Image 1 (cartoon, rainbow, N blue to C red):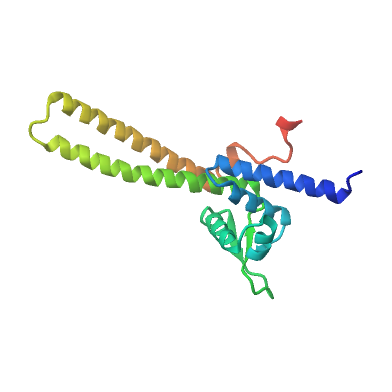
Image 2 (cartoon, helix red, strand yellow; image 1 turned 90 degrees about the vertical axis):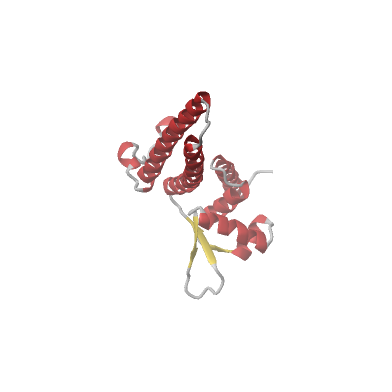
Length: 185
């Protein structure tokens, strides 16, 4: 039986939704988030929790959790539409911006966690240096660790600047968005 145009379109959309779900995993996001992102994206207009629940086969409670996670990652937003009483959710239609949002959200968390750990370890090791009776070997090891922590902090500072480089869209001055795909020809 020959496939109809609608069958082919739906098949292509489903493939794209699944690929978006797989790609989200690369960013440390659950595939459910990617699937919902793809569904809203392919819908090309905002959707309600009920519509998302129906499209995914998941409960509205689960949809609410997924959408909240997406909003926290800056890849979805609640939108207002005149005459619609239910909450509507939309996603960024620009792949580049979605990448930047995910990159920034994930790495900002990493930077923050590691800076907290840096402060804790730096304080503990600095306090240890003040103790009496520290062997020369232990003192040398503590100083090595403090130097390592300093390098670590420099790395996370660099990473913070990289995040800003993406969020400011300065990256596009060096790696411009293109309309043609040179690598897929």
